[in-house]
Image (cartoon, rainbow, N blue to C red; front, side, top):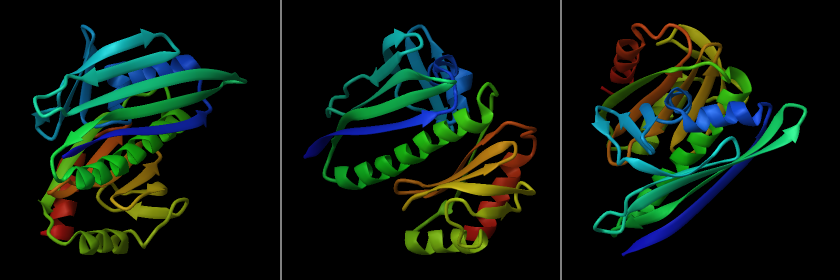
Length: 237
């Protein structure tokens, strides 16, 4: 079994098409809103996350600043993921950015994987919008930490929300591990995003795994990895 999928997302941002292009088509730009560390070179997008390498993604369209697309190779089981970005200037410094993610998920557990992927993509796109709105032109240092294994996800999210005061989008929260306050910009069933003055802090439900802290720090990132690792251990250890 398996399923083909297509997930379109779009938003108008207060950024120029050139600023959007830099965010979606360069390694430092992608580092500031997606996952881990990325490199765009030789017609290939490569991303390292959590100590491993994701499948390379070949650039299939690069029409600056309007159209950027890349796709992974089709695996033996049919799996692939493709990303397409369409960028349209709207005048007065605003731009429509549309991200369409498509592909094929194999196996009997495709529905669970699709749910996790959909939640992750919603968080990534919301982070892209936050980046273009508040941090465009700056480059982040990705900070990724994994908590202990989770067996009861509803309880895990209950613990996290209790720690943050059961905040919803627009609410202010205190992030003790970083020593800062932030504003919730995204909350999904398996994801949470918080914007601080110099960082975008995110929490994700690992597929068959732990709670993941996947942050983008625009200021000094020294010591943040160990601090967040200790924070996750305190919550879930």
